[in-house]
Amino acid sequence: MAHKKEDIATATRMGLVMYGYNISPESYGGGIKNKLRAARDKHYQKKYNLSETIRDVEIDLKPAISMKTRIIQLKDVKAGEHIGYSAGYEAQEDIRIAVLPVGYNNGIGHQNNGRVVEIKGKLCPVVGAVGMNMMAVRVDTDVTYDDEVTLLGGSITLGMFSRFSGLGLAEVMLGVGKNNPRYYITDKA
Image 1: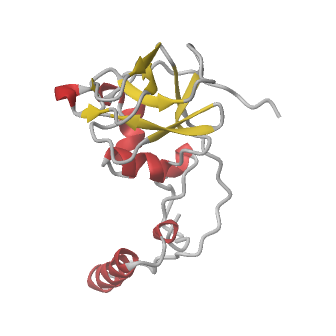
Image 2 (image 1 turned 180 degrees about the horizontal axis):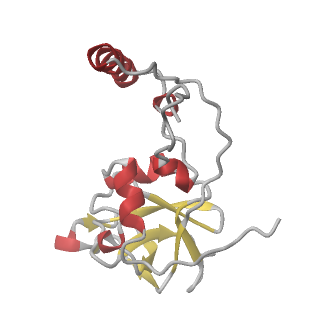
Image 3 (image 1 turned 180 degrees about the vertical axis):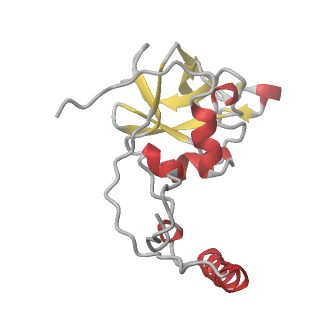
């Protein structure tokens, strides 16, 4: 989709566009990485006689995937108590956490780089390390057992999810569906 139409082309590699995400370099902004990408592209175009890369393609996309789970446990944690692997997180004050039945085995990555999830329209921070099949989230008292939790979708963008996980965009999309149940919703327009 990023090259001029050529008469010899009979197919298009869709990539992440299939999932409703436009990850063209313009979506990353005008920083130094984008300038380096442009210089690299020009180099390869000249070296291999490639067609010009078109970067101002307007595509109206809607994300076609989300990742959700439910709260399986609520727990009150006292100041000074520890949560997670190796007791890696210490509560600085009395807090309430929600335990989620997802972890890096579900394709969300092992890292927790400021990860948040969405519960009842609010962004809630993940506390402690992300486990293989569980993670803890700091929540308010209005959150209840079995509330729906959005990990990807809603106000959690693919870019945010990628940064939280320390994974590339394509790695996120490949890993998210690996060990998770899938539900297909059709739009009957």
